[in-house]
Image (cartoon, rainbow over all chains, first blue to last red; front, top):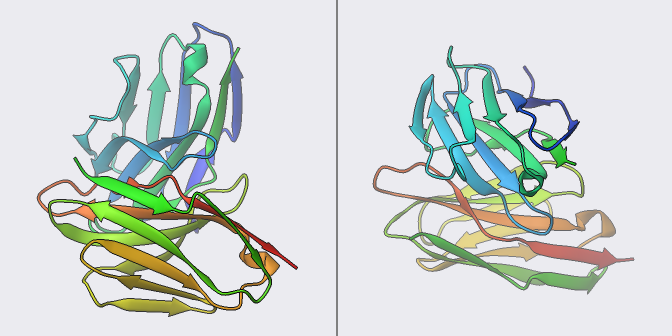
Length: 113
Length: 111
């Protein structure tokens, strides 16, 4: 696609529910990153893929968070048993190669009530 | 641990009043430094990549420069449409390709 696409744009869920956030990167991009961004802060790293391989998941806050990119393109970030503290803007970015600039999507605003 | 510090946190300028934003970094070795612009409610928009000390990149009223310890984003004769948050990110050598972001500088340009 022309840019990084994330869906849904907004998600409101009840505490304890599972949510899945989707990222469709720029076509052909090798690397895909997930970040979380609080208001007034820079993006905070969560996890990173090259092709379908998860290279680093050190930024995932706990084991309720997981991510996959099974065919090396679309990625899903899943949060199980959501808590209010999970409320944030979740951003996905992709880059053509691992050491090049990343391009961001519009993000998914998650609200846990 | 890689660290990125941006200053000032916020900056208010009059239209036409040139200034600079600072990004200081601490990494074991720099692979690349990226500047982004972020408008409210939008994702960061890529501006520049700098790879080595002494390198400069320009785009319209913006010029980014790099030394071994910091980068500057110079804004010449800014306009109100330059108002945004400017983010800096560094990518370290040595295996990890993860860009680490600073907290950003919020720029407001008054007409």
